[in-house]
Structure formats: C-alpha cells, structure tokens
Length: 107
Image 1 (spheres, one colour):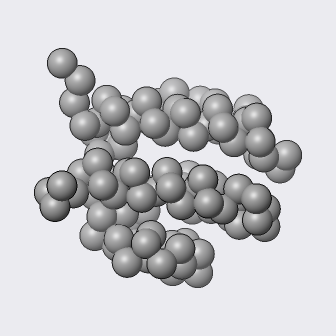
Image 2: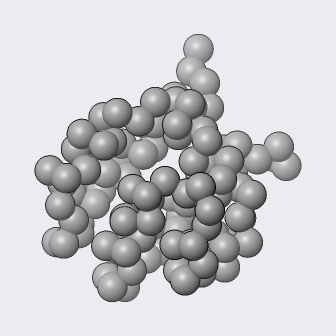
C-alpha cells in the first residue's frame, strides 16, 4: 500500500519531468539528483510546511512563498525559475495546492 509520502514523491517526480519538458531555464542536471534523493518523509515534511502556509499557496503569493521558514531551498529555487515564465504559473501552483491537500486533514 502506498503512503501519502510515496504519493508526494511520485508527484514531485512528475513536477520535475514537467519542468524538464516545459521550462527552458530549468537546469535538469542540477535537479536530477536532488529529486532522486527525496524520501517520502522529506516530501511529507515539505507538504506540511506548505500546509502551515496554505494562504500563501492559495493566494499564489510568490513573494511570501520564497520567505516561508523551513521550506526546502530546492522549492524556493524552483519558484524563482518558474516565476518569470507566466505560462507555467498555473500548473506550478496546482502542484503546490496538491501537496497541501495531500496532507490536509480537511478532506
């Protein structure tokens, strides 16, 4: 049986593949190993941090997203790569919302 952490790892891998395909400024070599090293626990902790700051996610607040304490630097880096590319915004925020909703007890 899969756990929430396993699900999050899978979705983070999907996010990585999407950025490799769609984001011209995304350095896939830089992130390949980082994404491979994400464990279910690490993914769950990241989602919990986003949940604690869900207002930032739901308001699509770029400024405060990058200032969330304890948010993994990799996600902050990804936000800075995606932000200048308007066509990628919607899907990026949908991923973050999915991460929040995956660990929310309000389901």
